[in-house]
Structure formats: C-alpha cells, structure tokens
Length: 151
Image 1 (cartoon, rainbow, N blue to C red):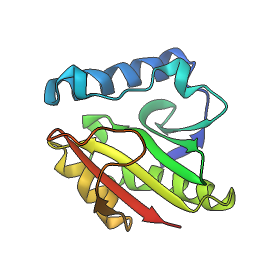
Image 2: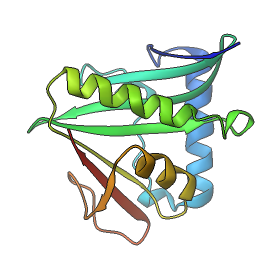
Image 3: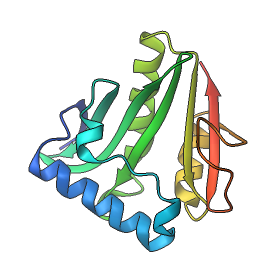
C-alpha cells in the first residue's frame, strides 16, 4: 500500500508514541540541553500544523510547520521510523510543509537540526535548503546545523 501523508492532530496515542521515538533518537545523538523539542501539546498549538505519514494506517513518520513572525515558517519534528527509511518519506513531508507555507504566503522556511544527522541534511539539501547561521532564537552551538530556504 502507498504511504499517505496528511495533516493530523498530534494528540493521538500512536502519534505520541512516534514523537517519543523521535525524542529518544535525538537524545542518543545530542545532549539534552541542545535538543529543542516541541512537546505533543505544543505541536497541537494553532501556530503549528502536523503532518503524519502512515503505511496501511500505521504512523511511521512526522513533520511539522511552525509559523513565526515575519512570514517565517520553521520545519520541526521531522522523523521517519527506521523500518521505513530510504523511501523518501521525509522528502514527502518536507514537500507538503513547503506547499502549505507557500499557500499561506510565508516567505522563508528555516530549521535547526543536529550535527550528527547526515540523512536529514540530505533531505533538506535535496529540497533546496541551504546551510546558514543560527535562525530564530536558537543559540549558535557546535551541536546544531541550520538551514534556510526562500519561498
């Protein structure tokens, strides 16, 4: 069956489980003080739209668009379960985040990711993002890599 990506509430048990996996994965690679997680409750805020990828109903990937002042959108909470990696699910989620940002008239997408996430870098660079200095209110840290894309 084809992977389906749709806007969903993060306040579902299976999505909570997926986000918990994401958090655990990030904490294995990055010190907690340099992890900038949104909680599921924050993800459910009006300023954030969450995309969930499902395979035959099973939540297997996620990503979100968080809106900021100045017509800036932030790509957040990107994750694909290891069992489904290599199938361009992250690319599909980024594509949907960008499409929504464009539809809403946002002018720029930004993101912060870890310094030990080369697979994520590939997804963002293939989607046309470029590395840049710190974005929004993130500190400049050896643990962070920043990207931006003009829309």
